[in-house]
Image (cartoon, rainbow over all chains, first blue to last red; front, side, top):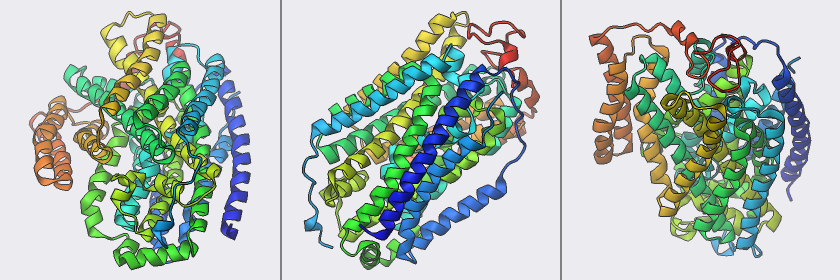
Amino acid sequence: MSTISLIIIALGVAVSIFFTFGFIRGVRNAIAAIRSTEPAGKMPENGHWASIAIVFSLSIFVIAGIGYDYRFIYAGPLLVLVTAAGTALAFFIEKRPS
Amino acid sequence: MDKSTLALTPGLTPALGYALMIGLGLVSLIIALIVRAKLVRNTHDFIISDRKIGFGFGVGSVISVWTWSMAVMMTSAMTFQWGLSGLFWFVVPNGLAIMLLIPFTRVLRRQMPNGYTISEFVRHRFNRSNVATGIVTATMIFGIILELLINLKGTSVVMSTIFGTDWAIAALVGMLSVLIYSYFGGLWTSVMTGTINLLMITVPAAIIVSLAFDKVPGGAAAVMEKVGAAGAENLSVLRPEAAAGFGITLAFGIFAAAIADQTFWQKAWALRPEYVNKTFLWSGALFYPIPICLGMLGLIGIAYGITLPEIGGDSAAIGPYLIAHLGLPIFVIVIYALVILAACYSTIDGASAALSSIVAVDIVKRVAPATSEKTLFVITKLSILGGGFIALSIVLSGVDFTTLVLTTYALKSSILLPLVLAILWPRTNTVGFVGGIVLAILIGMPIRQYYGDLIGTLSIVSISGLAVVIAAAFKPVRFDFSSLREAGVLSGAAAPGEPVHGLGKSASQTAS
């Protein structure tokens, strides 16, 4: 097994644990939200156009990069761990309704 | 890199395949039963989760619903067929389509806070026009049925390629496994099982792809050397024939699929308002790595010089074929099968939840507004089973995977611009909306048939958009979007504190 695979497996385990804690927090928040009587929040005005442009450009950079350096092949597996970690992070960012 | 060394890993029996499908369904069923006990009290909770889905479940469920068997298998297939250009044209519009929903969700959720479905919006937007509403409702239902059967087909392709199962039995077992748990919990179950499925897709995908490259003699460097040797164009993202062959059509189709998909609108109205925009931004951004990661398997296919007949003639099978033949340990192959099953199940249950909202809001409460809460709840749940069985019967009749995807997207393309303009342009009127869609189908579809996907899709989009603009010029009207705040077939008619058409919620509770 290659070093990069070992790193990906180790990161995968860490991300899974983080995700599990996030999920548990999310379930607790959902139950609290159902019981909550506080008024709903407000809809933000932000269109997030700059963030969309950055993400869009980054995706092109990563795909094009694979054609220039074979090591970019591992960007996909590493970034997909960011997907799981990012989702877990979203659980911790959300506020628990009182 | 000799492809004669590729051999099916022993021990991959049909029984193991069926066990995985049923096992994943049973685990989800347990979650559904817990969710039903804790979070689902009535139809309102079942179809819209009391508009209280948080940021985490929002992101997790939107990504998992958008991760079709297409994203998992077609990304490898397109890379295998077109090199990095295939990956580029498949991946880039996919994530962007989710993020580009923000301008529309921002308008609709703010202007119509008590909404449930996009057909309901069209009904209020076009002066209760039955034709406009009927077209959109039919398109949504048709799209959902196709979503179900495409993913079902995906499941059967994987299971038959890896485990040698009978594809028809695999489709039957897969559909039953999802329907049983979807039936119990509605949208809450869908977002929670979808989020768990996301974990089952992402972490295993990273490990499997990395281990797959380890199994190739010379690893990633050797693969890329062979891919370049097979054709320098494989290493470029600017291959024009990939753009013309499928890329531009798919880009339009993907955006049309996203905007004309009740699955997303249901979530836009079910999320806590403060997280709606952020959820679609994060979901689009975090979706990108999934198809990029799994698309890498297509490069291994090119490096080995595998031909379509060797994998059964369907390029969608390249990923499953390689994983089953590279000599990976059996547990890795089982995990790969679970990745694709998780993707299929999460999309099917999300689509089923969306279908239930359409049936409750756009059909039952419109046709029979006096329907009691108890009856509505039963019908809503039964609609999930009905949609599933319709999709299953179509799949069992046998259809081509890629053709089906492109046809779906072409049909949805006809509704793309009229719907976009209906949301953003107050001068869009009923004649333009209906005329645009009808003319796009009547003129655009034959053009597509004779001149191919690219010209056909561009014609469909242009005709539909032009019709809306011309109709607006001939019959100038200006829609007052603020009137949508009072809309909502289920919530708007009730006075504060009064039951909302038997949904068990009050108008004051549903107002956000």
